[in-house]
Amino acid sequence: MKVNKLAIIGGGNLGTAIAKGLLANGLLEASQIYITRRRTALLNEFLEKGVNVSNDNRLAASGADVILLGVKPYQLEQVVKEIGPELNPNTILISLATGISSESIQSFCPVKLPIFRAMPNTAIEIGESMTCVSAYNANQEQEDQVLELFSQMGQALIIPEELMAASTVLAACGIAYAMRFIRAATQGGIEIGFGSKLALQISAQTIKGAADLLIQKGTHPEDEIDKVTTPRGVTISGLNEMEHQGFSSSLIKGLLTSFNKIENGK
Ligand SMILES: NC(=O)C1=CN([C@@H]2O[C@H](COP(=O)(O)OP(=O)(O)OC[C@H]3O[C@@H](n4cnc5c(N)ncnc54)[C@H](O)[C@@H]3O)[C@@H](O)[C@H]2O)C=CC1
Ligand SMILES: O=C(O)[C@@H]1CCC=N1
Image (cartoon, rainbow, N blue to C red):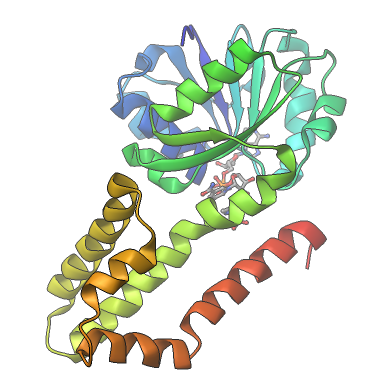
């Protein structure tokens, strides 16, 4: 992708994770990246790497080919209106905000322009994100450009905008759910004899191996489970006990709770 200038407006948790992902992949020179937030002192690590750090959103947006909006949803309208004079019909605007439609974002802009919503997860920092993207007012070339950008920092997919809430839950919140699984496994590991450090190492690498089996072989989880569950063995006993305690059910209910909160604000 030919990007001369990329601006991240709102360098918080997600904005800085993306900046780290871009730098780690050498996708752009540090000098091509602009990142803003109100308290710029919190972005010193980027300043030291040669990234342009500022609290001036218009300066960052001016002449940028790609603008990523990393502010909170309730701050989006004000920020888009602020940078409005710097937008042109070719600017690629990518919103990371949860729950604000492309149509609304377009209504904050003075010109019609390609608008993308992207929902990466925090593993973007290490190039392992699952990023779902929706496109609005964009042509094929622009869609390909945005997909290419996020594909360099993990896997990326274009999805219909109506699935953005679902992708937020499955992929973005999903990192937190997976972390909680690993934490619980670690706590169990300590009870059966490991120190916390070793228990965490074993649990995390085990989850990574499980995910990689599915990703690399394209198999179904139950096929892989069948290979581990010796008849009358210990794995099936543990798994069935987890299900009696509501393991899958609690995960699905949690997912739905997150989803309903995005959809209905509850
Ligand atoms: N995909 C994911 O894994 C995650 C997605 N999100 C989504 O990403 C968006 C950002 O969330 P976080 O990064 O957690 O928020 P955050 O609060 O860490 O970051 C927002 C940043 O915007 C800055 N900011 C606020 N007003 C500004 C302005 N007028 N000009 C410039 N900068 C301004 C703040 O100083 C802050 O650094 C939200 O919409 C949230 O829903 C958040 C966390 C994880
Ligand atoms: O928890 C949240 O609301 C945001 C959306 C996805 C990840 N963090």
